[in-house]
Image: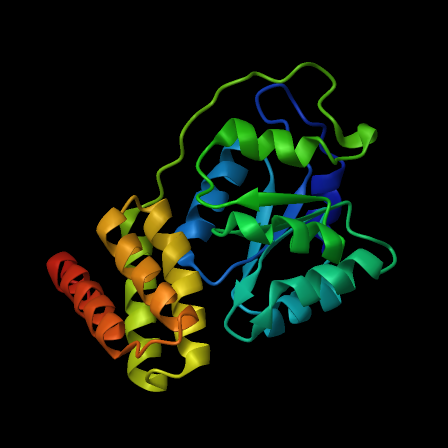
Length: 239
């Protein structure tokens, strides 16, 4: 742990900043989802680092021991469940391990892997975010007084959303239409679209996922999804 983190852990939580002194590693490939968590950490007093893959997370964890680990289940180089399982068994154990996904059906798998809790995307309620972490935080890091309760809704910058759309466009261009690519894109983009309240794009993602699981030819669904992604990129003027 670096000097700044040691100093951070000596800071006492307050009613307005109940996560003051907490350090969080967020393992998340979506910039839009990560921006929401960053804003919540900022308002709550926690420090945050981000890893966008399992490999990057392992590099962070080799030198950095956060008090909170937030792990997306679907990552570009594997399952976040594997990282949750490994960190749940590690000694010393990270105080709070949370798995997250846009698919509520992943809750049981996350808890069985050893996480303290499951957080369903979209992550937009500041109160729910703080409450989930504090519910599993050791008593010596709890705020000394009742915290100021405010259920602020967090809305990340749309630039981060278009960064995620560019990422999907690149994945589809590079990897084509393999089953693994479809699974990754639908998992990634489904959560992102719901977080951004882009319901038309979310429907296109859902339709493609259904084609894939029904064993139907997904070419039409991929073409539709690709057109929608590129039209949103073009409308925002993002290359």
